[in-house]
Picture 1: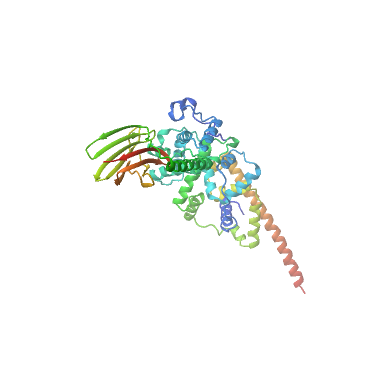
Picture 2: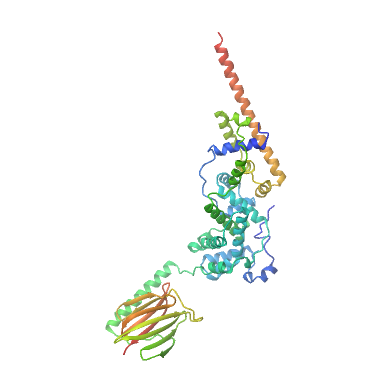
Length: 244
Length: 238
């Protein structure tokens, strides 16, 4: 089970007391966070000040973390600008973005800010580089390998009927399985990361991968068998009619 | 068939490249949806929608993995991580509380009516000019130069009046913070005579100069963001 660090892993009150920024403000208290947001929306300058002081370090940390995780280079000035842009986007139009925060299902403000900051950083990286994605890593890996399109399986797919059958098969999978297949086989995301997102264990990720592959294999074979039968019956019919 | 991971990878490669899944991504979901998804709190229909969206949206797929990594770790914020100028820069951008539009409109209407009534009454019952009562001092630096200081709640004005020729003077206004004495920028200084506004300048580096102003009655006003910070009535004479 994932724990929400925003609520359960927040710093202890003793640590907070030492930090002048957080004096008298308990991050664990969701209602207090909501009250702060409410006051910010009302335009209270002190509340905005507290809000910024409260989350400035978190935003800065998230930016650096996301940039590091993708081995992306960003100058300190760019990081500073991005940090300010994130807060400005929150403060923009009299706190319009802040109004979107609902805090339902226990999503703390700090968690919400994490998502905003992560997303803004990804957007920044995408702007800087045409695209930064799992697909990029995959493409790089692929260029080093020989294209394996010549294998037996894909030869079967040359048949248009088989192709449409495959499309139907993939589409017939549950969205979760489709996403899983994409991440596991196509994007080649490390199983540990997939496990974290889907709330599986790492071994369950491998099992799920094998299960889906088998499922697809059986369905394709079944389809192929069916087509063979149809073809042979057509062939037989033709042969019968051709006989004098 | 499909006995190796490479087989299925190639198959999916073909599938995703065939354009079958290249529909335009829909609008990306709100931030809280990612939390709900990771915490398994999304209703089935919304979860399916998100999963289908993630299939086509690289941006959201990327965000999901970053957020899941961020939520996993224990993080203790520490303000020392953020360079001081960065935090200060954003703190200086905090919006000031805005009065509701209707309130602002009402305030303007009242101000206009008051101003109209005063001007109208002045025609029939000319009044003695009233000076603004503020803390102030007057220094005569030389025969042709007088320096006045007026301190208001939000601004300190230093007015230097220098006679430059017969019946004319330069008026230099220095705006300062009343507490620190630092130059007060972004203030619009207006000079009005009995009938109209004669000149209006924005203080640059806390200074403004009105040149060659004929002797007479003037009202000097200091305004910032439509807020009146202070007014001084001057009578310059030989």
